[in-house]
Image (cartoon, rainbow, N blue to C red):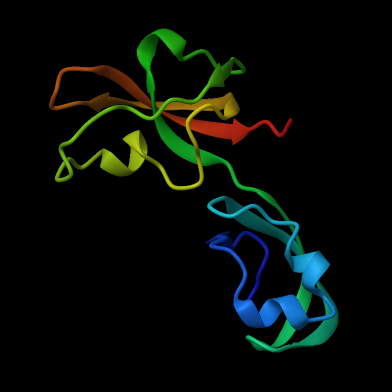
Length: 134
């Protein structure tokens, strides 16, 4: 399944994983984070959950998120705070409350994309954020 460039949300390990000899390798990922496959190796292993798996190199993926305009400078380090909004039907809800980012995460603004036309009138931009691991 894994191919370079593929992204996935790590939702934690299954109970069957705790008995696997590769448990420590798989358990070094953080629940709720999005990872990107950087490379795959030809090494295959048997997995009690998925059958056959290959060894992959992953890293935290960059995340698209809404950022308040006064904080949008490429290269700037920010503390991520999701936009408070209760409008679940808004087309931008996935940017205001993106998967893979948590309140308080330190992030670098990699790229400023488009201005968001917020129905509430907030001044927001879509930005690509890189999580800075501490």
